[in-house]
Length: 58
Image 1 (cartoon, rainbow, N blue to C red):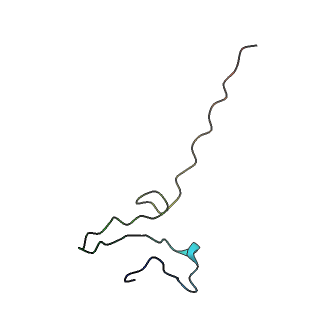
Image 2: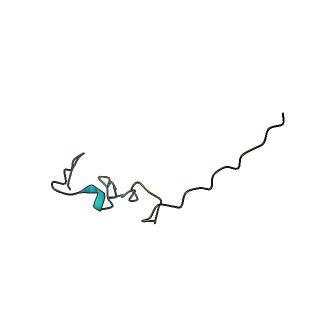
Image 3: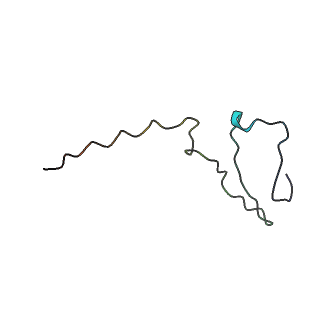
């Protein structure tokens, strides 16, 4: 991408792809690639079990 703060992906449906973001400093240090979602996973985790109902005394 070169130097800049934004990039337009013309005619790309972003729902069909995973996009990661990384940065590189002037002296060559690179940050880890990050993207929204669980690291290393390409599927949503299963939903957490519902909390058990707690009975209250009357």
